[in-house]
Image 1: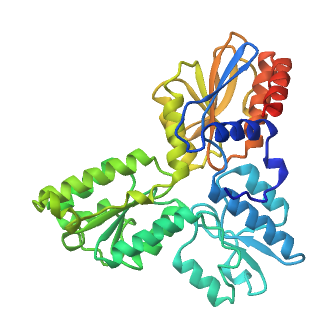
Image 2 (image 1 turned 45 degrees about the vertical axis):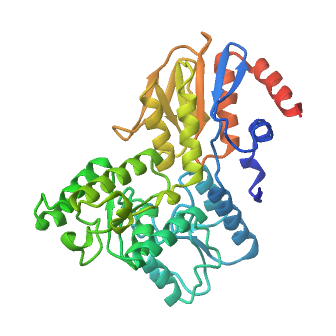
Image 3 (image 1 turned 90 degrees about the vertical axis):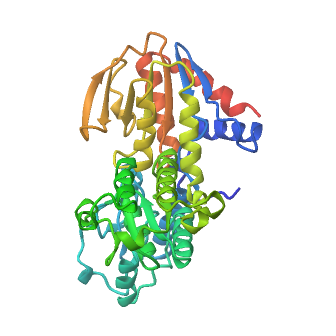
Length: 410
């Protein structure tokens, strides 16, 4: 397994020791049961998989290498490297400036960027249109290209099935950087439409069947379809790909639903499925799958609350929160400072999109706490959250002993 050269302050001796032991005991990743840590009066249930994925570590390594290799040069990122405020702040502290915000709004005009500058492509990738702008300025976008290989895999698969005559349906958040990039790469090959959830997939199915008038499509999917899209023509053969940070189960549900709809409408026999629907299950990201499956297994255990750590604008982290909130109180926190005391937490509410403060059951009463984090969250941050939980619950000494035990076990 490849290791990456990322700053040491993102690493955690405790989390590294736990992950190494789990990998050694479960080489084929078949055991998704959580790791149980007894921290004095508090029991922590740590998800089997969480934290930096391959694509994130790769992106961070390349970004810091770009700084090291280009002293004195102006260095820019197209937008946030990943959706983690701490990592993005570290990059800005190195002198890196962001050209756009996460919605694509320009922060620095293109006129200010020259061929002498360094421009880094973030882990989400970018659009073909932006790549062309960079090339016209004499910049090679591939020099410091940090696009996640699994995002590129989705692009390649979309291109292949598009060239085979299928229309692409992208499951993603229409305004998300990765969805915008995937949409751009896909529509270069074939008609493409974005659906944000199962409800929109249901709406699309009505255009497949002809239940809704074609003219209404352009209002229902405004800004989510390629130029020249013709529902009656372009929804006859489809394939579904995903924004890699979405709920894997929802992507599969959308694919299954649209598959059933198109096969039923065209009365396609079982041995002729490929005439109407392309198999794209191989586009689901391994890290998204692993982290979400680990949370589902985590939820099989009794607990008082769950803490999910990550950037508030992180798509993959928000879906971990959604999984947890079906079972128990869940608190989406950005860092250890959100734990105000043993009875109060400051956290992000996904439904109101605001940060709020909530009273919780005292952590001094033998609480059982589930802990996980998103794919853009450093392990060191998870350890700092555990440190804070120990401090407010009066279990500092117990945590010290736990760390000594974990870090010395072979």
